Image (tube, rainbow, N blue to C red; front, side, top):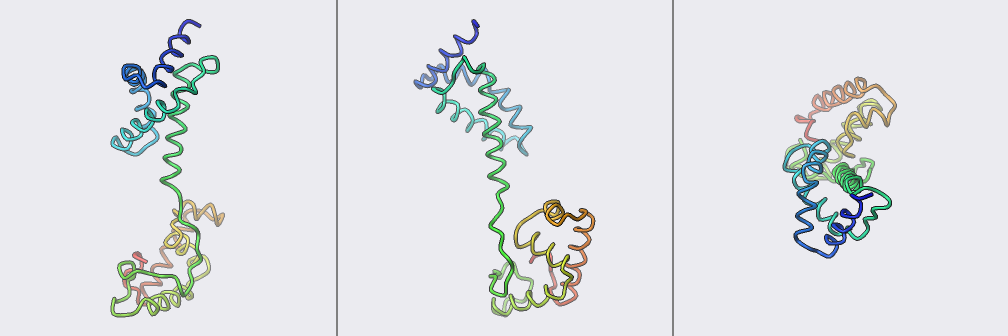
Length: 187
């Protein structure tokens, strides 16, 4: 096809680091890449950062473009989509799951218990209060607060309706407050 040859030459020039070629690639696809980025990401600033990262990636991988396998626009969109998915995955990576134990460390800023009590005493008090909750309430609180899962994720993990999970969290936090944890939502 006649358009493939100019695209192939453009990408060869980009691979060689020709500034004019990089500018041409950017001018041609910037709006399209930005449009997809804004659909994937939460705000303009994040989308703009992603566009810059995507064009750096396009420049670094320009030598891999093969006009016989795909049109340039298809290749640019593939690289864009992969980058945006990677970016979203990095944002949603969860900390390693840990079971809350009496040795679980809670910093002074996280704990609702007065600061004149030692960390071990705080942990023991919190651990004791958690043991008074129903299994569902304790599990929801542990997963939401200590393991960093959203309530929707906890709902899927427990195979329970989202409303049930929200109610368990609400009732559990209320019971913790009643047991002397004044601001249980800051666990």
